[in-house]
Amino acid sequence: MKIEVLEQAVNKLLVLAEDDIKSKLNESFAILRATAIVHQHNHWEIGGQAQYGDHLLYERLYTATQSDIDSLAERIIGVCGLETLSFNKTLNNLQCNYLNSLVDRSILERSLLAEQKAKDILSITYESLKNSQFKSDIGLTEDLFPSLISNREEALYLLRRRAES
Ligand SMILES: [Fe+2]
Image (cartoon, rainbow, N blue to C red; front, side, top):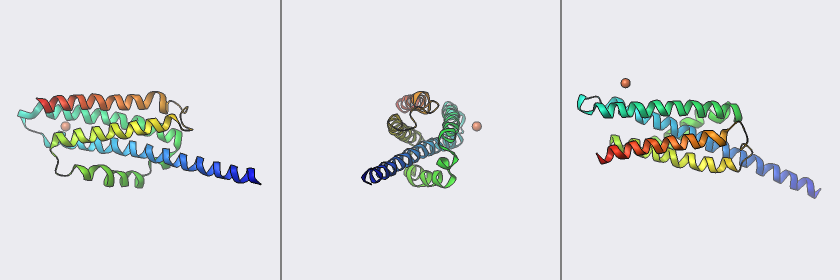
C-alpha cells in the first residue's frame, strides 16, 4: 500500500515536471514570435533612404528569427504535440509577458530588449530540458537550443554595434 502511494506521488511529480517543461517551451516559442514581430515592425517603421542600412538590418533579423521559429515549432510539435503550442497559450504569453513591456521604447531598444529576453528564456528552457525526460528526444536539447541561443547572441552583437555607431 505504501509503495502504491509513493508511486502515485512520483507520477504526480513527473506530470508536473512535464507540464513545466511544456510551459517553458511555449514561452520560448512565444518570445521568438514576439521578437520577430518587433524586428519586422522596426523594418517597416524605418523606411527612409538615410536609414536604409537599418531597414536591411531589421529585415535580416526578422528573417533569421522566422527561420528559428519554424525550426523550434516543428521540433516541439514533433516531440510534445500540437497542444504545447496552442494558440491561446501562445497569445497569452505574447500579450502579457513580452510585447506590453516594449511600449514607448525606441526602435533600437525594442529589438535589443526582445533579443535579450529571448536569450534569457531560451537559456532557462535549455537548462530545464537537459534534466527532463525530453533530453534525448530528436535533438530538442543537443543541437536546436544551442543554435537558437547562439543566433540571439549574434543578433545582440549586431544591435549593440548599431547602438554604438
Ligand atoms: Fe520589406
